[in-house]
Length: 325
Image (tube, rainbow, N blue to C red; front, side, top):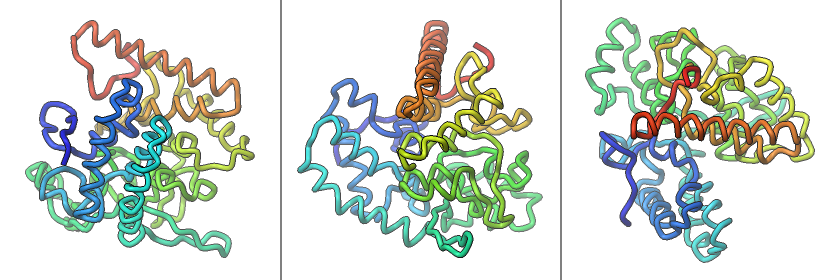
């Protein structure tokens, strides 16, 4: 293992939210910290070599769940800057091994109009309280009939990095209705670069319907480029939807959802850097001048808002209330 960078505070080993925060190592690469970037990728790769996947954290009790599969994207971004082909060839068997884990453990099949599609979901094998949040999980499950299933869905939500959000709840309000394993997430499938044509919104396997509520995760296919460049209309429709429901109207950036009565952190009014970054990049990569301009404005809004908070508090924060700058 190489020396590594940690997040902060209680996150004193690598964890899902720190990887979600890195997304791809843009910051390190922009600072020309190529050796640090490579070491971070090698550390994650060593976990795949040992366990077959990147665990949700650097502790034994995380070995039953993974995290968003961003390692291949990290290798790609590193190559784009360094052109280190030898490193890519070294990492390729590791990336294939990680994909095998997702294919064998997180893939399912859906049939649409007679055509079968391979899709991915977060679905851990743990059905016990999370060790890092044991007391909280025990307390939350007190009134839940099927505690084992509840704990599995809780752990699966933690695997996504979105712990917790109404996007995993059947009533879109309370954690007691969590059903993560039934949700086909747009962003997960885009990270594996698949299925944008079938998944424009999260899809629920139990109800057979889409979750039409806005979450920034629906923009991830724009960020990853998992759409046909000739189908510009699809990205423009998504942009129009975002404008119509007002996600660009907040002074501090894009909120994590538009659901205002949630008590979860991955919902309104909180905004997170990786989500705003992916929206910015997705808009910037488009072929539409209006979308590119919106991406620039959002980037400036997010940076200036965080700079203002840093000046006032002398700290950079994990999340911000986008409606209160």
